[in-house]
Image (cartoon, rainbow, N blue to C red):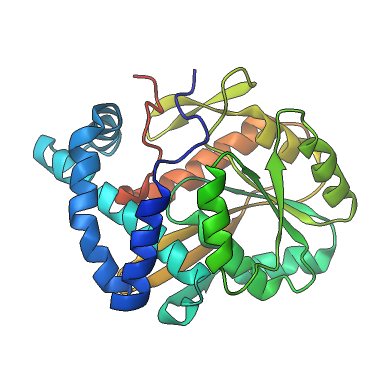
Length: 292
């Protein structure tokens, strides 16, 4: 059973404090608030502490004390990504710099008009991916498949401060499975569908694969769809770097036999591993991912 329920923690008051700090004091000053926020989560959430200690100690092979420090650092960086997301939505995008590593792959996929599947993970700051996609997708041909289970008051507040509306479309996962029809409709138009491939919900079909040397469960739907379509597959990540800088990575998946979902999953986990070796502190699945 996945212990992730589709909801991230946080309150409307907390978001308003961050927005105030960002607008009045600047982004870097807002980061200073995270010294206390990160410590709060470090102390008050033992289950996520335990899960992250396992990740750093057993999967990344950190020493005991380095793993302890890494947990706090992970909370701090995660808080930075939230502030960055709010800042960019509030019109401060020009405060950030970006590297587009593999943007030619995305442009090629759009030019080929064959449709395609983009798969990412909850590492880095994928939630601002739409800001990258909007720069190359002038006809809104990219659809991001996501959950819509955040508290509505927070969602409405973030939408109210958003200056530049994204030029991408969203397909929200719903209990009645109506999102399946939206996905099929987008694919029939040769558009690109973007999933995350590392989280699943209870009672949904899963697949097993090794990640960082240990077997884990992944949502089967993403990889079944990717393997059954006669369309290219690419892996995309938006990773945070120092000094308000982000790096977009796009890597095209190797040619895989039709309907071989396990091969797609294997290529995906190998791709995620490479990112996690480069950015070990940006793994943001704060639950017992490996069930170990």
